[in-house]
Image (tube, rainbow, N blue to C red; front, side):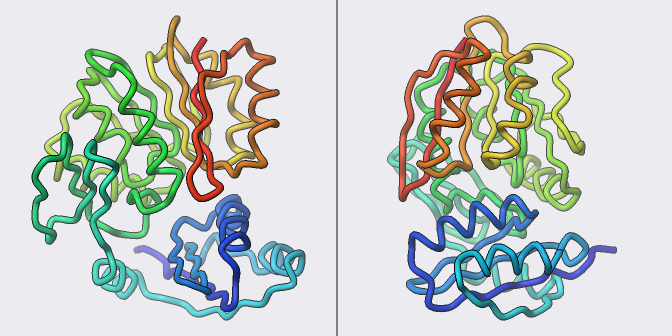
Length: 272
């Protein structure tokens, strides 16, 4: 049986504060966020919620929050009610099954909008999708670290990937990704529930849309699992994280191809 979710609501928060809070709360296990003009709502499984850690972050920013507990059924109904399609240029459309199809887009991805992070609304998912457009996935092997809804793994298969290993440490995300993979008729994606990435072979493309601390912790593992002439895309990063990521990558011999940004979030493309 699934546990409830804790919702934190922060009022009178600036866009810049909101971006920083999302990054910091993500590192504590928060996996859903809703932003409005001057407020932010953050969501986490009740079992994973640690109020002392949260208080430290909000004390640092001199902000306060209100807390409520949501049943998962109520969360899903609310999410579906507010979920809007996302268009990434003319390349990819992310929509729910209850939305109408859109013409003149290369790839359409249908997801069940539940609690997993990564619907395409967040800037980092958007940036990852944009960068994937420039890579050759035809008959390639892909490792998706922190798959969330499975959206990047699904896109990789639609782009021609022969095999995709998609991992996450959250059971709910794996269950949601499984539903989305089936909805998109994908056959080449293997899902794994695990705490840390284990790359038992080398992959042509490695995707990691998580956060700075996790990327720094495992970047050497991801590099080791990268095939010759392979590509690594990392995101879940704020602009101020770039130097630390580039320093760690250079020590492993990874070549920096490009850094792209959106709303103060960045995605970095490396190759070996």
